Amino acid sequence: MITGTTKLLGVIGNPVEHSLSPVIHNAALAVLQADDRLEGLNYVYLPFPVKSADLSTAIAGFAAIGLQGFNVTIPHKQAIVPLLSEVSAIAQAVGAVNTVWQTAQGWHGTNTDVTGFLAPLQAHDQDWTQVIAVILGSGGAARAVVAGCAQLKCAAIRVVGRDSQKLQQFHQSWTELGLNHLLSDSGAAPDTRSPANLSVHTWDELPDLLPQASLLVNSTPIGMYPQIDQSPLSAIAMTKLPGSAIVYDLIYTPSPTLFLKQAQDQRLIAIDGLEMLVQQGAAALQIWLKKSVPVDVMRQAARQYLRS
Ligand code: NAP
Image (tube, rainbow, N blue to C red; front, side):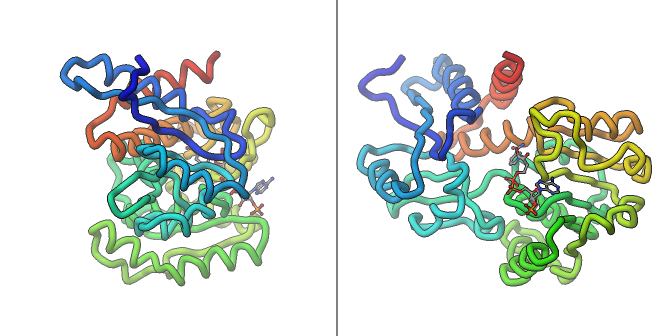
C-alpha cells in the first residue's frame, strides 16, 4: 500500500515506456512487502521519462525529494557520470552507469549489467581460463560482455564489428582503462596478458574465429523483435563451432531468437538475454535495499509480462 512513508525508486531514460524494470522491481517489492519479517519495507518503483537537456535538473530534483535510487537507461548511461559523486571501477571500465543510489556524500553509480551477464554463465561448470570468447558487436552491451569475460579470465576475448575505425577505438578504450584495473578491482590477480588477450576483428574474419569459439555472444540487435527471421550467423556458420560451445544471445524477445534456434539445432548450450535482464535488476535492487531479493519472482514477472 502506498502510504506517507513509501520510498521511491525508479528508472530514467528516454523513452522508458518499454522498460521491463518497473514490472520486475515492483513484483519483487510486493513480495518483500508482504513478508512480515520485513515490517516497514515500503517502496514503489516508477518510470521517469527524462530528456537529455533535463538530466541534471532531474537528478537535483531526485536528491531534493529523497529518491532512494534509480536505474539509468538509454540515452543517459554515459551522460550521468559527471553528475555523480562516485562511480565504481566496473562502471568506469564499461563506460556506463545503470544503477545509482543515494549516500551521505551524494549519488553513487555502478553498472550491474556485468553481474547480469555473468549470472547464467556461472551456472555452467567450465574452466573459463581455457575459453575463447567471440563477441558479435561492439556497442554498449558488448562493453559489459568484455568486462564479464575479463572477470572470468577468459583466455582470449575477440570482438567482431563492422566498422574498423570504431573497432580500433573500442580496443583503444580498453587499453587506456586497462583490463588490468578491472581485474584487480574484482579482487582477481592482475592479468598480465591484458589487453593482449582482447582483439578486434571484422565480420569477414568470423569463419576463422568460430572453430575456436567456446563462447559466442550476440551483442548486436540482429534478430530482435520484429526482425525475428534474422540471425547474425548463417545456419552453416553455426556448425563451425566446437560441439561444447555456449551460444549466448543478449536479446530476450523473441525467445528463442533464430540465432539460439540455430545453436539448439547443433545441440549447443543456448542462453537468452532474459536472465541477464533479471539479474542486473536483482543486483540493483539488492544495492538499494541492502538485503537479498526474490530473483525468481522477478524472472517470473518478466516472463509473464513478455508473454502478455
Ligand atoms: P548498441 O550500443 O546500439 O550496439 C549495437 C552493436 O551492434 C553495434 O556494435 C552495432 O554496430 C552492431 N550492429 C547493429 N546492427 C548491426 C548489423 N545489422 N550488422 C552488424 N552489426 C550490427 O546496442 P546495445 O545497447 O549494445 O544493445 C545490443 C543488443 O543487446 C540489443 O539487442 C539489446 O536489446 C541487447 N541488450 C540486452 C540486455 C539484457 O539485459 N539482456 C542488456 C543490454 C542490451 P555499429 O557500431 O557498427 O553500429
